[in-house]
Image (tube, rainbow, N blue to C red; front, side, top):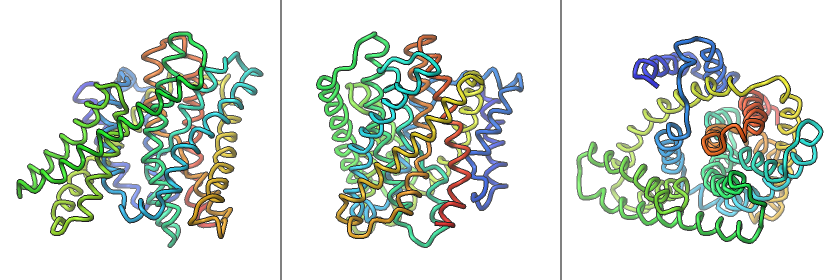
Length: 393
């Protein structure tokens, strides 16, 4: 991607963010995605090469850190059980159920193996709260749902990457799915990544006090964001969970330390600029990249998988609420419906798809086509439906 292409994409993102002030009926990600699909037919932009490294190594760590650092430690304490269950056991159950459904129904349209079906499900399990959280807070005085959606997405990005990575390795090597070796690797990669992030987040929370210059504090947060991510990836554990853990620890320490308001303010002012910048590029290039993989034959199957993903998630969310100390006394089906509908597929799902494309090539073309279609349906339909659904319920 050339410098002039980046500049023009950023300018288009600026226009979209500026015009869409309320972000209610037509949220920004939808506009950016559809605009990106339109740009894919313009020769100047269709030449953009979107690869895993661009989004995974450069864009993703910033988005992960922002969501973790800006998430309220108070909300994390309050909904820790619910968030933890949805982003771990709930995610695994969702991936298994959706994988089995894909294997059963996919055979009618194409020939997916069980491993291919589980891989598709792994790609579709992470959720993306971009714009959804602000919409939920605008449409309701109850911030509970928005806090759960945002907190779950923050953690499940990491667990879904670990789940996908193990399955992808089996797929590329032509291996069969084995549960216990998979479980062992899953735990090592997950816990290792989280531990690295928490340790480095704590160190930086103390080191930031050695300087009172805001620009140096911001520099240190950049080092923390990308350093924890790439260190964890280098040693073979989850960089996603490392960055999330670092952001959570930094926010947690600042929340418990006196006289740190200016630290939080200075860091937030910087990352508040980074977020829309990165999001503009990400959703525009998602639209440009998706066009090459969208074929008419997959839309019926994609529609069925889209509906199945929502229904399975609805039962998982409702079941988790039944066992939650906070919610089990007053199970609210309306809240379950909104939390389920707000589980939009987005940036992380595309990153996983591009990763699979890089590793498996043409071997994964069928998976790419149907999964890209589901992601497009999710971003468009669910994003447009969040505001009216939350207002109605």
